[in-house]
Image 1 (cartoon, helix red, strand yellow):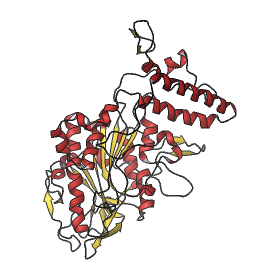
Image 2 (cartoon, rainbow, N blue to C red):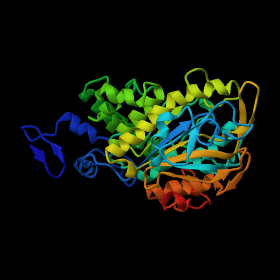
Image 3 (cartoon, rainbow, N blue to C red):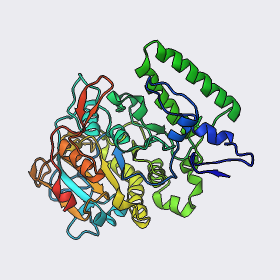
Image 4 (cartoon, rainbow, N blue to C red):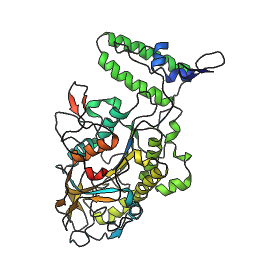
Length: 440
């Protein structure tokens, strides 16, 4: 029996089953900020059928700072190029590094920016700058862009996380969290895409779980009555989301064995390749923001190729090339690419001059970023550097420009303000202008 008001299935006695009840236990706040579980709250907490909520973004993060010379802006006539040769792409006149043969076949889907400029050359500061869009200051813990998208795009009744991180950063202490947005908008972390997330299934019966949630609610009310309304509200929001998640029938989205082996092979069996496949599955299920880390599998150097770069760059490319290209193909074939912005980038580039062993240092001028989908016009190159890749000679693009362009793609006003937990107003993006070529 279906109850049209509550939008739930009832049993033969006209009762809501336990699991339906539990999915709605994560309820609504009263004026005092305290959860009350009653019929009024169950009506208010009803969720619509799963559907894609607006647009989505997938960030493919090359952790450590990839070399533009060995990826998407080779300089074959320069003394700084090294042994990596350029190869043709399906975009006439555009060449990329020889270790990216699959990506070369989908360049018509990619807008390649070769003229990125930023101000930070230290990993920690550059990651904070390039993954938040804000200039670094010790006064504010700015949130990652995934947390911002979670805040702007997420549906409070949705039973999957709005923001998922796949893979691990090279160095955990350099990772960027949700900052002033709080734990509610932190990433749900999947360290290994081939392993189902741990501890997401209840270990007790539905009845016991319901009693525990009820007891937690009672304690929350008492705590809020003593003046901790704000803290209780934030904690309840986290519990609400977690309850919906662990009881969701859609947890299968994390199980890659549901996909055909042929498709998994096409993505590449590296952790990054399988992460790209998981990203597609998550976005298809309504997740707003997914980031997939490429941090290498040989050592903790990742894309930070200070040493032995000529040997390690091909290995890194081999781990990422197939997954990146197949993600774009798969999204397009499923009719999802137009609504999904896919961005390939790192925190900066590498110096033109290289060491005897092929290593390159950090460099913040003339690095590269690739964008696809989300209304972006693929098949174009924006900006350029001089013959040696030392200076930008055409159309410099700053970090704020890039983030304003993200907003344009996602249908977000970059000048919109939000209030942090400390009651401080912040614009989504400070400064910057849309890179109009991306959308023309």
